Image 1 (cartoon, rainbow, N blue to C red):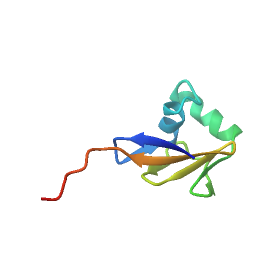
Image 2: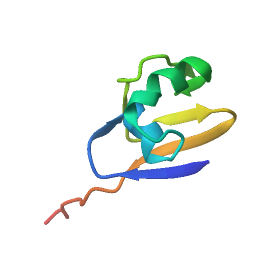
Image 3: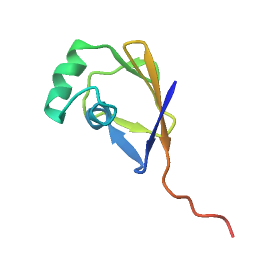
Length: 77
């Protein structure tokens, strides 16, 4: 499983596909999602605006990705 680090609270599925290099631009996301089986936490997903949060597991063509939030965390004082 490949870890994908983000700095925001979530990333949309279309942005995620571009971020990991499966598509060149966001306009291709609709076609890519229609032609491939993409599972988010085990559920087939067809919405390109689906929000992916920390600990989401995305499966695309038998490859798995884990969303990890790498944003700076404040230490407890």
